[in-house]
Length: 156
Image (cartoon, rainbow, N blue to C red; front, side, top):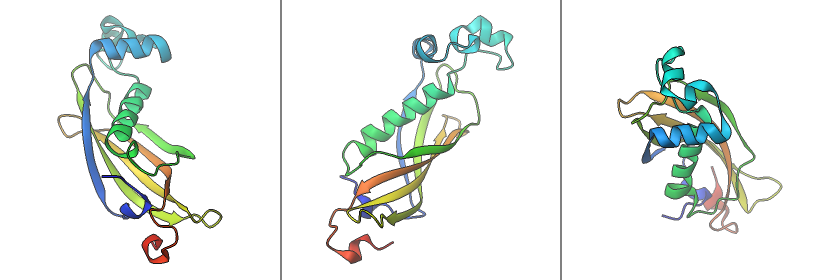
């Protein structure tokens, strides 16, 4: 499906695919971007309050962004995002965890200054294989209207 502004309905949710975290990915990401000890080694993770190696929250966010692009945004009228808010790392993500992304539409509106596009407010919810919520992110994204000349199609 090619997503456009009109396809997002407040209150709706779309379940996207999942990502399984490996030790190599967790450590490799940490070495490059977040070299805190509990992301780098099992021993350091064991000695921490986490009790084992855990993925960086940024690693989890990046994996969820990859899912979002592959499953939804890559084939859409997306014009990018002005930003993310309220990133919450709720539970640690560990080696072998499989995390699935759900995107909930909170609100949307057509831009007053550029009526060929709209702003879609969403909340990302990432759950592990046990159904436990591990991450939430509030996002605003710009999407082109499929038919900007049709005022009924863009009404929210």
